[in-house]
Image 1 (spheres, rainbow, N blue to C red):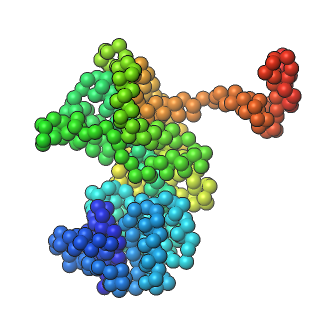
Image 2: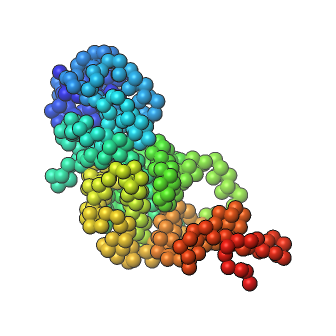
Image 3: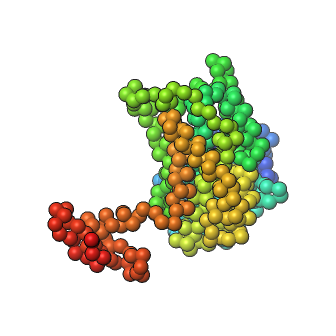
Length: 478
């Protein structure tokens, strides 16, 4: 009988199933479309001996050794709930369901609170990672995770002998960590797109040259999966036209919603993740291509003055490094806030470690990030000495790149958002005193004075006719 079952043989599900089989676990598989099950089994080669294809849910359940564990690789939302309902009628009380798809952690919280043993696992790495070793972030009761940990430890990515699989905490903790991972992924991708836009539109570099820059950067501090991917896609030729493939791809970015989930949750937690927000907004703007084309005809060209930008590649590299540190710092701050809000005790250093291999945001910096987070768990990553020194050394480059791009009319949303976050965070006295005064003037919301611990002071304010004052508890206007 099978050691585990898997439902959903889409791109990720099929890759994960082959990974499980290759690691010498027997598994049963089922897909609602039976022809897909047959095709998957026929294409599995030597691994077919460990795979049991099934064509009804009843036969699928019977093919798994009790107490059963069943992985769902399905689209988020109602599809998962419907499948759980169907399975509930067939499973024993102690059989475990594992949602390993992209799920909203609130759904995982709800499902974990039911009678059915249930855990949610975030898996990152795309098709390649699912097939050869993903990063695994689990959430739910620890006893349920322990039942299947040997399988997930075996199939997970390895970093210098360390397994990139972690139990993050109870309920939806694993899917929450995966959501933040995807938010950082959105931010990182947009930062790279920002510097690509500067090189392409501001510096008049072709895709092949840009690919060479990314290749050099991947040998330095920016070494990461996404920089490697950027190098390879920029260097690829289109077999139809002979042009750079990047130059024939429509500039409309797709998204599956996980970046939006990250931004929404950050707002709920009161955590500023400005770089993620800019990245999500930029994808939304990219979808409005027809409007952008119309606007291009209405307004002056992007390159104000029509002159070529002169930026040293090393300066651009350091600017991207500064923004990247800020993007990760925002993500870890969001995880820290959720840990406090939901009582999860999320292990930030271990999360940094589990992202070192297999996942989309793996980066050479994550080792140092793990060390910094272990040294002072409650401290913002950007304030850790190693990263504060890097930011101090590179923030001037980020500032000059953003300024030059802005003067040229080239949008750099993620770089700009990162710089603004940095400038606001390092400003001891900001401008929110004016906002509090405005709120009190029109809504009597109150404010706290700098010379008092009380938080409910009011006016008095000059009235609109300037002849009288709105009464309150503040100092008199002079």
